Structures are given as structure tokens and as C-alpha cells.
Length: 129
Image (cartoon, rainbow, N blue to C red; front, side, top):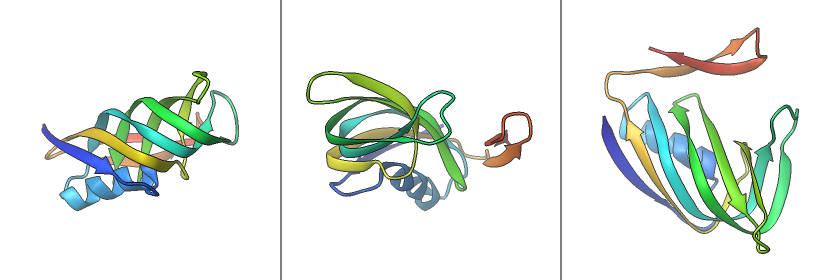
């Protein structure tokens, strides 16, 4: 396992940036071990919900973790708003960094993650190779 520290800048899309960092590293499998920072827009899909909810405002990333492949990511995140309320769920495209996002990625040399539609769940699920 190798690690990669990553800092995202204001305006970056969190999910797209994580996948791009994996691809740029030359690896095909990885995990976000942890992430902190802030967002001004979060797109979170809650358990069992078909679509994400859009959260706007000053949001703090309290935790971020998940798997990464060149064809996508499966990330979960908890955020708090300016009143300290905490929400968490599946990270969808469109989570936009407000001031910074600081992440630690674990890169897995010699491994390949892909996503394939699983008929049982209806979602593209992780295939480990």
C-alpha cells in the first residue's frame, strides 16, 4: 500500500477530484482513508433514497471514506452545517469545495477495482481484481 496526501482547492468537485487523483497516480485501486475540509454545496444520497439531497451553505466535512476506481468511487461523508447539525450519506457528483479539502488516499499497487451493475442491488458495485 502507498499513500497519497491530497489537498483540493476552492471550487473543486470532491468526487471527481478523488477519481482524477487515482487515475493520475497510475493506480487502479484505492481507498479514501479520511477527509476533512469544507463545502459550499453537498449532494448526499441518504439510505434508501433514489436521488441525492442538495445541501447549500457553509458545511464542514467531518469524515469522508470509501473506495476508488478509475470508473468511479463509492464514498460516504458526514457534514455539519453552521448550526452544528450533522447529516451523512453517499457522496454524489457536485460536492463543491468551499475553502479546502484535505484527504489521505491509500493506493493499492497491483490491484484493480472496477464497478459492475449488480442485479441484486440495482447499483454498480465493487469488483476486486
